[in-house]
Length: 195
Image 1 (cartoon, rainbow, N blue to C red):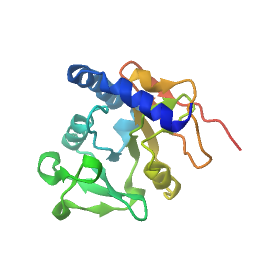
Image 2 (cartoon, one colour; image 1 turned 30 degrees about the vertical axis):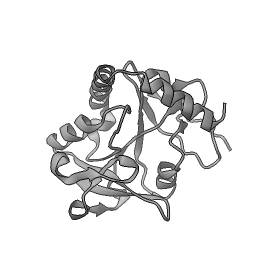
Image 3 (tube, rainbow, N blue to C red; image 1 turned 90 degrees about the vertical axis):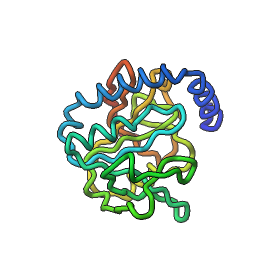
C-alpha cells in the first residue's frame, strides 16, 4: 500500500475512536512514557502538540513542565520547510491556533532554541513499524529536522495499537525512531542497516 492510501485508511480508523477512548488510551501512553528511563533522564523534551484524534500530548506537556523539565514545541515554517524548537513555559497562556489548525506559540512567547538542547523528541505519525519507520502527514518536517540535527536525541513515536503495522512504505530519506509507545506496549525498534 502506498503512503497516500495508508494515510487515508489510518485517518479513517482513527476518526472512529470516541473522545473517551482517545482520552483513556492517551493516558495509558502518557503513563508508559513517564516510566521510560530515557524520559526520566531527559532535561529538554521536544513534543508535538496534538490535535483532533491524535494521541493527546497536552497533559504530557503540562506534567513535564511541572516536573521541572524544559519543553519545546514545534513552530512550522512553510518555506523552507522546517521545524523550529520554541521553548514553552506555560501551556495554557502561551499558545494560539496556528498553521494546519494546530496550537502554536503566540508571537510574543516564541523562544527559539537550538535543537542541540533537545534530549528527547515525541514524534507524531499515522503508521509505524517495528523498524522505527513511520508514515507522517506528508510534509517531511520531522525527517528534515532529524537530518539537520547533529545531536543524538531519543525519538519516540506515540500512537494507538492499530497504527502499528508489520512494515510501512519508506523512502531513502526517512529516519527511523527509537521507540514507539501505544496504550498497551513500549516497542524498542529494530534498527536495521539498510545500506
